[in-house]
Image (cartoon, rainbow, N blue to C red):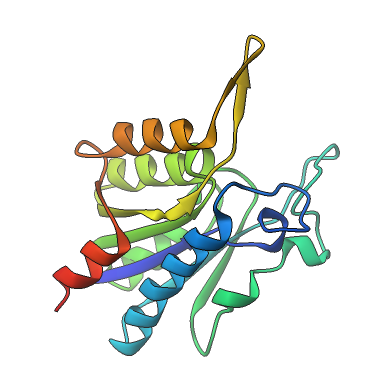
Length: 183
């Protein structure tokens, strides 16, 4: 069993001043940072997923912009792997699966942005591909969503998506619970 940390889309556009600000992005990033510190201390693999938009009508993560850059609190260091993606599912048309298999990784600890989109798509794909997934729920962030004239608050979106992913697709836990279980 070999475990890697998968940091998904922790990029400037999701934070204050960005073009797609999420609710509780700073707190989620701080929790992701705690997990990152642990993985670095233990010399365990860290993989960053960086979304770069390719759609002509995209409004965030535009190529060659500051908004698409990885957020300064979790900047990659040393030999940490950065994989660029263009779709919500981090496995789609990327080298992620090949990299995980070549490095004998069987377990993923997942965190990042947006819970209802890229976290959901990637976690489900990872499980379907045979990986054991732990999702750090408080190290993920989302936003309010709308449907049929109704607004679904980010806290409800977060709770619903974490509940849907828990058990079947992943073990959802807090960063503190995860780190406490490592010692």
